[in-house]
Amino acid sequence: MVSQEESEAARTLREAFPRAQFVPLESMDKAEGKALAVAGGDGTVNSGALAALEHGRPLLVVPAGTLNHFATELGIEDADEAVAAYRGGDLVAVDVGEVAGGVFVNNASVGIYPELVDRREARQKRIGKWPALLWALAEVLGRDAAPFDVVVDGVPYRAWLLFVGNCRYGSRGAAPGRRVRLEDGVLDIRLMTAARTLPRVRAFGSVVAGRLALSRHYRQWQADTVRVETPSGEIRLARDGETLTAHSPLVFTKRPRSLHVFR
Image (cartoon, rainbow, N blue to C red; front, side):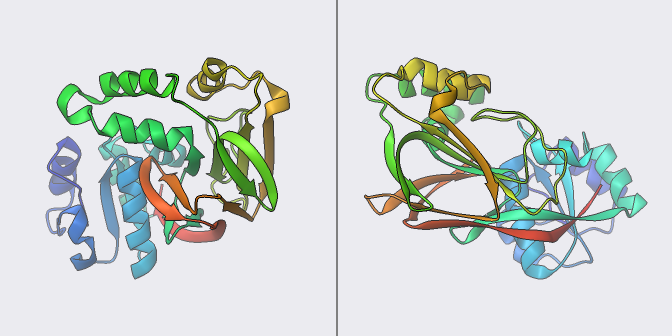
């Protein structure tokens, strides 16, 4: 079993599984055993999912981060429930999305959200995550904020945000809520386009508040693949809240029912 760090969740796992092997997240490839467990938030779960897929092992998700969307949608709210899920032995096969050589269990995005994450992470070690998020939001809302040019499945757009969800999300908008299923075989694609008449603050407010009032600037559809290109050749991408720079074109695809998880 694998834990990200010593924490309350890790202590719970050590007490429940005294014979388990614990290694740092970056040494996950060295872990042995019939299953992998990972304690952390969604970004950490992303790394655990990739390792589980590469080694053909089931994954136990232990929520221990600031955001635990994937664990919540599995019905696991804390470390004790994760232990119960493992002991119950109820395994399910869920989808993952794939892009830029990695996977995403929740969603991936291009545009203003990766920029927001980058600015937050630059400050959160000094002032904490939520103050850093507010500072980053103020900067992103500043006058230097601008939409980007993107070609999605051959159609050019001027856009603020492209959101690609692993499975269909239940609510409308550029920052949707929860999913009903984790194995429906589709990508949930949402595009917030830009226009000269679209106020920047309203565009960003729609993302942060999880709603989109300007329907004429909003596109939503489902597919099993989507191709994204930018004129610059580089794309700042967020996968499950972790950012990276990728090269154009990006092709988002599905790996249906490929990840086995306890719930």
